[in-house]
Image (cartoon, rainbow, N blue to C red; front, side):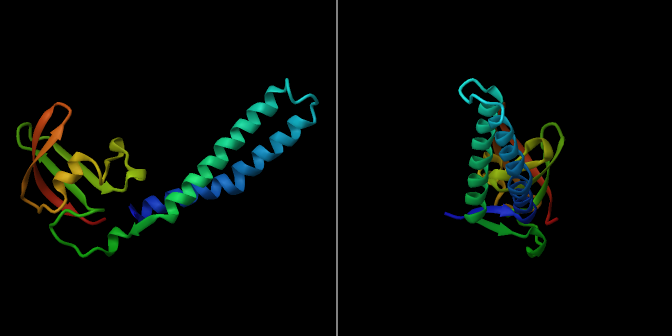
Amino acid sequence: MRQPITQRGADRLREELRVLKSEKRPEVIAAIADAREHGDLKENAEYHAAREQQGFIEGRIQELESKLGSAQIIDVTNLPASDKVVFGATVTLADTDTEEELRYQIVGEDEADIKAGLISVASPMSRALIGKHQGDVVDVQAPGGTRELEIVSVEYL
């Protein structure tokens, strides 16, 4: 199944992949070669650490290639502007009890970062918001209980 991701998220994954392939991979190969020159590999901590790092890098490269291969890239700026909450929308919410304002963008699972205001499309909050419109009030299950949030604005940035 294709996983949705924003253009910005896909670009970030591609950049990480580029750095791993063109910078980190050659560095670790050079470190392994250097460690081999020090002799006995059985007791060579530098060699074992470099091999472990190589395994991590190769695993991450495979993971990124797989994610990008199965991604459905959605350019948020090309979405028709409306007041409806969809994947990629940036939503400003107001807590009806505390009047606290929250602002989140609904993004793919691999790019979610709550501290940066990016919430996963699979999160309970996203599921409660998707399909709703500006002005609607939604109940969201939060760790501290149910929160009633009003959708103040919907933007496509």
